[in-house]
Length: 467
Image (cartoon, rainbow, N blue to C red; front, side):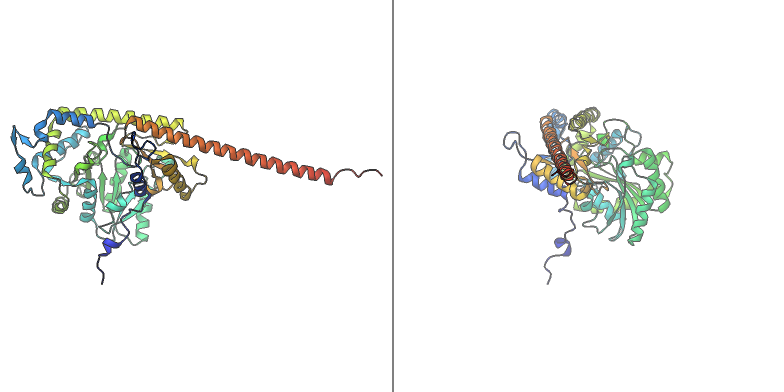
């Protein structure tokens, strides 16, 4: 008799991905400036730790919020008691206003159309449960966040079919790539229920162009399918072109009274923009009342605590704070990204031009001995075990081209980032020296072979001696 379910014993969680294996190696030997200066530096974790001082300053000035008080009176008991899954109205109002502010108030959000979830992971999985049956498929442009193999597939049974994007156009989505993915799904007898994109992109660190967004809307309209726009990095855009939300394009196209209006859904979270992944605050925004109703019921399995909602409603309602935070955080991200890009350039490594996110998409193709994913994995193992940096290989993001890596820059101090850059620079120099030495050795070998051959030739063809 089977004692455990198939779900408990199957190996479809994705934990064996190099993305997660790198974390495991880091946890065995984590870098610490004092305690373990030769340990592995974590560059595979997209956390934003650059603006904690701004949050801590606000908390110090607003002790009532952190102490669960209102007008000086404790509301601890009220928050400690059961709250239903709809969420605190004050928090939902503050959240949708913050979302609009990040988008330059070009769009507004209705708090009655938002569903609170325990992070974006829960939001994306909940949407899968709402929009697709097991064995149906969503199309995702590559490269994509490795965690989607877990978040979208593991418990839902939904399949992912990649939209193959390439470096030839900066990994932008094209009409032929969309159609090819749709046809591939049909060949596999998979019914396509929608397209899911991250905008800004994880792992590329780029915002989607208005042309791409229009292309996507036209595609999902033609096919009669859903579009999910995961916009959890929307507040991290630090340089032009600016961020364009899918909701803005919907309104520009005057889609309010069309069928596609109800088939576009947005995922958001405070994990990246505010740097609060531990608070587990995510959200689904949808114009479809049935999706909102079903997702709200499902949110019972992953609620945001009342204490968290109360604290963040106070913080996000402080418009002076949010305005300054968004601006200062973006400025710091820009400086940090520039530091990494310039440092890698000095090591002879280039990055895809980016304008958002907490990472760079780094091109190390020239360090591969051959253009294969096997060699990419060999290089990754060297970087983790010898250079002592945990970065994410492109193959874990389903990239179609070997040699790309996602490298995070916002989850460490500037000193640690400089050390990481120096380690990588030394590694590249040693590889170049080794390569140069091998070339000299090979050249010397060829020269000796030719020399020996010439001596042999001269000996065989010399004039006979006179007797």
